[in-house]
Image (cartoon, rainbow, N blue to C red; front, side, top):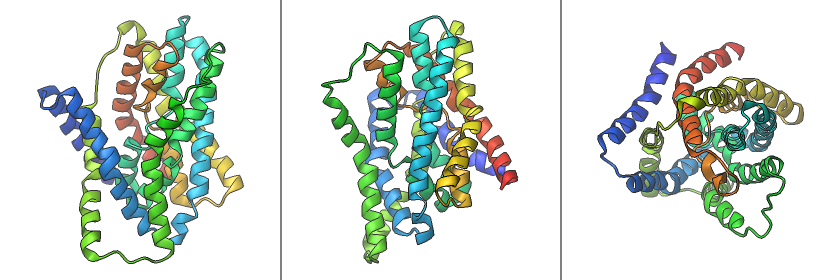
Length: 315
């Protein structure tokens, strides 16, 4: 019954957002603005709130969390590259498969899901897990880009640093500030803390609401098999990669139980919403990419509760 209630709590704001999309309440540019507000304004508040109050035991999980993100992304990139060569004869479809599979929605849907599954401890560790998402996403993505298209060169692409600073700086600065103030025991005035709590309070529902707003069902029937394969790679096969990541991380770092659960849940997150980023650098099928994002996100809402049940049985 507890799992059912958690699933309902996750799906309600997503469904609410999708209803608003169907009704056309928000225009496309308004949806983008709302999502930008959540990412750049309210998310830093919830990151700060959780890390400022995090205990020392939680803070020890920063390094295993970041290591596990890099390893998991590498494993997905390697397997995505191998399978993409056999999934289709068309280069565009091969590229689309590779780049919609190698990175998951760890820091947006992942945060929302882990907050509902494991509360503040789960959310805190999921923040640690995604702290270096953009550096890992861009670095491994461009390596994958090289192997998918060896003639391509990113030399002289000064936009890369701008993109990195623009997307990675906000969560990293929020985390560093919160952890620093936590360690030196700085007291925050009650009025300011109340302001932080109020902004942090609506962040998770708004994350899930904007996911619903961003659903786009554009796909070709002829590409359904590729979409299903990419979806299965992320939300089913990903669990095996998650177990492998967990095993290797434990060999190197002390990893607590909640962190292990976070790694496994993150490993079955659907395709990252920013997968189309690489369309600028390599030929990809936009409808196929959109189809994988939508399809994997919808079906992950069914598979995540299943994996949650399995994870709770394991631990």
